[in-house]
Length: 266
Image (cartoon, rainbow, N blue to C red; front, side):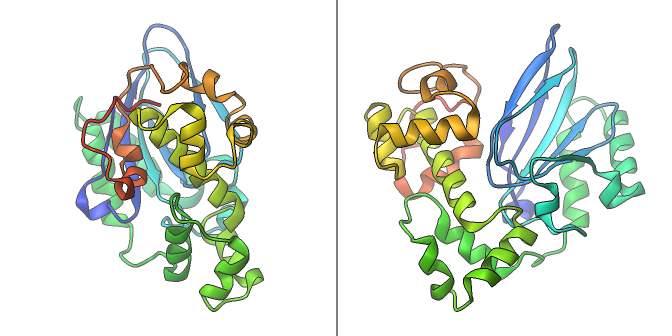
């Protein structure tokens, strides 16, 4: 189950969720989103997953509860450059020390249904307002889907050199501007597909900014390891039935998609 973060975290966190596995191990296919993810499995230490540039399959043990937080690109400030964490998983204690251990213990002892609130309480008390790099934040905003922008001209528009912009992206986002744009474009496509908005795969590919269906297929294979139809499970939309509308709502806001238009799913 995914939901929007509480208002105090809305500028930093894209979505929060709780996941419960059944009697069998579950292979979770994590896709690039452009952001960092905090994952807390009850009974274990919290982990941080750096920004992904390729799919990452994580096998979750049976009867496991996972609490997750997905940060928006460039919003989480850490004591290391984020490009050091790209495509990596790291124990949160390596970055936050005993504070991470205390969070893991508190989650393990929390009543059922209270874990997500507890994690958000912890983040709200720890994250500093205004910690994001304002120039990076503006660049990320301009790289969102539905905003055609040439990455080559982005630095000029922001009155900064291309090399400086890339360095700031690698430190604060973990990947460069062009890889982030490609990732966000694919997230925009998923938002359309999972809301059931658009005229088939080709129509949604064009709406998301791809040159054609073949362009979408190449990017989908690169970012997910699957073809669009394999990923979605149906020609036009994902049919798994999970509600992930909170995760994709920011991408659909500019399109004015009616509330409840199609079942969102991952």
